[in-house]
Length: 322
Image (tube, one colour):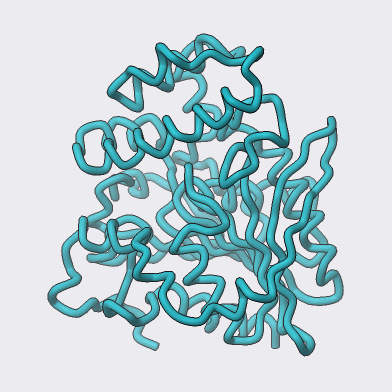
């Protein structure tokens, strides 16, 4: 495959790539992975429950790939289904994880989702690895899921996941506060996320009406202001900036990565400013690939074709699986 992402001319635009990443177009066609999926309930420490979907291969798989969605995405998001389909069709078992309050899992836990909940996501990946414990485990995350994937690879320095072999992080959030402000400046993308977040908060309120009253929060028109309000009401963080700093990945935050990792980003990403990567210090286990085009979570080569990163994942995973 080409090491440079080269979309057809009519797909070069950053917003085109970003919108197509989550477009239902990517769900078209037969998806054997989804047809073989089994819903799984992961029971974690402190009574936390997370939902996943495990798709085993009919014959022995080359390995297991755990997919982590972006914020307010789910195991059924277009880019998750498309990537899972490509991996499954290339011989890999696939496990799609829903974070707390993502997908239709709002009823499973009384507490709200925060991006700082690394321990429960780490434990969920550990449990998922047991489904194919004799095979190599691969982890791939997108946007906020890419941030989680990087933090998991770093955490493995102190708490290894035995069969975790490789991590791929697509368009990872490095500076959450800056990315939130970037979204707020982009009218179409802001409206997209506001709609999804409001719908999610309404689900949570219906599940726990004695715990939450989001009526005032739902009327706000900015992700930044909404975050501030929710942090003030429902967390122990002093403010949104203090919260964002807890999962930011800046400067030398990734220098202790313990698992071989590839990070894929785009210069034209409207949500993740490319200069977030400028001062990022990486060790020899981490490869950073920054393409000229790709938008956010895009890297779509043709309208009904696969993405550059899907082919890159299979190339890497095949090599690591032997």
